[in-house]
Length: 159
Image (tube, rainbow, N blue to C red; front, side, top):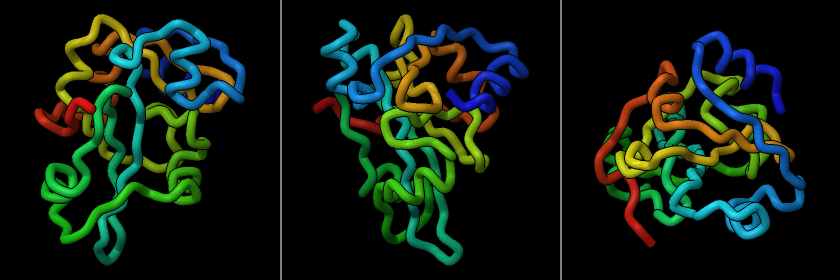
């Protein structure tokens, strides 16, 4: 886990528990199956790129059983004509984290964090931990404590 993740969580005084995992099982579906977490209690941090000059980026947090509405909700909120998922390379560059370990905390670049309102209704969530060998188990209050957090209704739709 990136030391920056723990450092930010500690500096903000936020609650979290580290959950170790096999890096080969870090992708959400594999992790949930292997470790017994329900997809509706797992949230994915997804970086979205807005096509503008200069390019604009935002991190979105959505439940694993939902699909982020990039083409309508995210694009409109960003105020751009086109938006798409950031590439794996862009995600690593902006967060210093690999896909499967991305978390809103301790990123190498400050990104706005848009949290789907459904995420905030869960009792606790499993999210990326900064690397593929760890996850974080957190209450929604921890996510709301992120300095760039904004809860957005309808950011994602159930799959």
